Amino acid sequence: MLTDEEREALVKYRLEKSGETLQEARDCGSMNHWTLSANRLYYAAYYASSALLIQNGIVAKSHEGVIGMIGQNFVVTGILSKDEAKLLARLQNMRKTGDYDDFIEWHQEEVEPLFESVEKYIEKIKLLVDPKQN
Image 1 (spheres, rainbow, N blue to C red):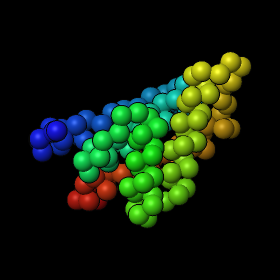
Image 2 (image 1 turned 45 degrees about the vertical axis):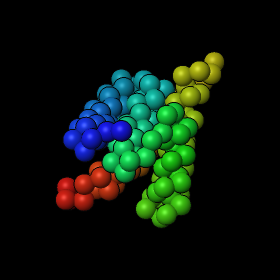
Image 3 (image 1 turned 120 degrees about the vertical axis):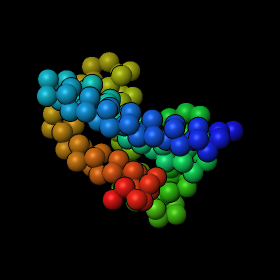
């Protein structure tokens, strides 16, 4: 069980990690490393998602658990949209196939359009974690 101070520090860290990882995704894309860029986009969204769960005292022990808990606690309740849940699942699938499947490479036309959606998702999570940020 985390203390309030520990929870706050961990949430802040995960949100910072999310922003850093989003920048890594941009950097990879600028060098035409689109499979790696897709990986980093997923992790940027994952870190933000985990921050939201931690903020709300929700424990998830796996990537699937994070996605499931986001769906159960934030999509079903209407706080996050079904499209945002689909984005997270799509990014996870892209990361898994890019990392583990042979002969799979993601390309600019598949990855680049996801940047705006991931950026909006992270910003929404930040507002949910700390509504005073706006």
